[in-house]
Figure (tube, one colour):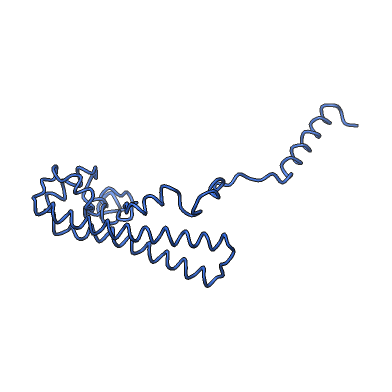
Length: 193
């Protein structure tokens, strides 16, 4: 016979085991997202697409010494832009923003259509491939639009203005110098033998 303490311990163990296997649902990181208008996009993402926001799409340019038009305009006085430079930067920004808003609207519409196709169970593999390829193409064009605006400013700002921009934006070193601080990057010498 089991003593009272052993019996209680055994019953507690059985209760825990039964509770763990009772089929209770696990909390998903997606819980609550099923109420979204477009399941794959948050309200903030939809707003950013429709506003033509950069959303980090031009970091390859921004962090490699190619300033972006929106931030250059924000820093125009600090950078000492001439009237001609302001006009050129504004034109680049206006073109980029118009294109980004058009593409952002198209992305939101395509995501809405994809969501509706899944919700209506009217999607097959061919339709899915066509829809996702279209969304990928639109996102690629949007990224190109933001990156191209940075590239277009390359001939507008002086080297001094570009360096000032980097400092004003809080970037510590020039892009070419960043490898010098990488501990994995080794230079030949006595310390590496």
